Length: 189
Ligand SMILES: Nc1nc2c(c(=O)[nH]1)N(C=O)[C@@H](CNc1ccc(C(=O)N[C@@H](CCC(=O)O)C(=O)O)cc1)CN2
Ligand SMILES: Nc1ncnc2c1ncn2[C@@H]1O[C@H](COP(=O)(O)OP(=O)(O)OP(=O)(O)O)[C@@H](O)[C@H]1O
Image 1: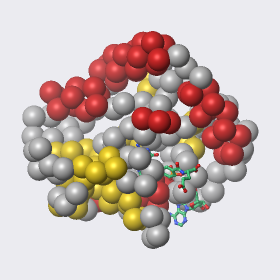
Image 2: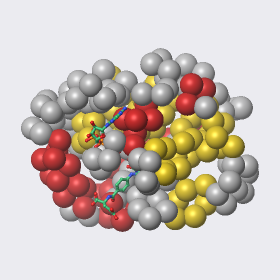
Image 3: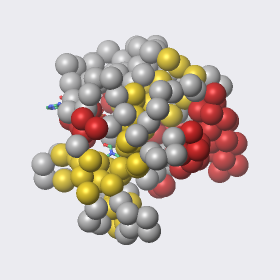
Image 4: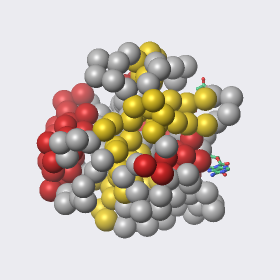
């Protein structure tokens, strides 16, 4: 399958999930996430879900990680649309967020976490394959960002659906995931 087909098909499948089904699948993904044994995490890059695209809400998984890592700090993506660039911004408790042009909550102010400091990254996706390659919205924000992170940083995706066998048009910039959590299984790549 090629990226564009995966993008269209998986967005469509997600948009067609009834609300109660989405809630049920979200709970199953969170309970699978809880089973993961991960090394200590000091810095996590999380994300606020794109609600109108029915993205998986990572907040429960973030809470699970916080229980396991008492001093963990959390950064949020902030994008620069014209540069196709992204940063991880650390926000004070009760810090302010504002919706960007894609309707995603982004921090206002805050301190930038250098990409090399991140231990764990929750990576948004539309679909993924059995090798851990993923497809996003096609702008390459995450691929550009992940290239600046330590290769050892753990990259985790979440999906309501299983992997496609093989995404054909992978290029040298695509960074594979280490794990993808679905309602029925944990993929480790
Ligand atoms: N929750 C979340 N945060 C994220 C991402 C994500 O995928 N999910 N991103 C991951 O990269 C970055 C934002 N990237 C995005 C890229 C394109 C579109 C999008 O909807 N594009 C429309 C065109 C909209 C327009 O140009 O006005 C489209 O493709 O139809 C949204 C987000 C950073 N933060
Ligand atoms: N590190 C990079 N340097 C330069 N160009 C890049 C880099 N990473 C990705 N790109 C380019 O960005 C474009 C979009 O990439 P791709 O289709 O893989 O996006 P995506 O993974 O769906 O999006 P996202 O990463 O935003 O979720 C491609 O043309 C790709 O070659």
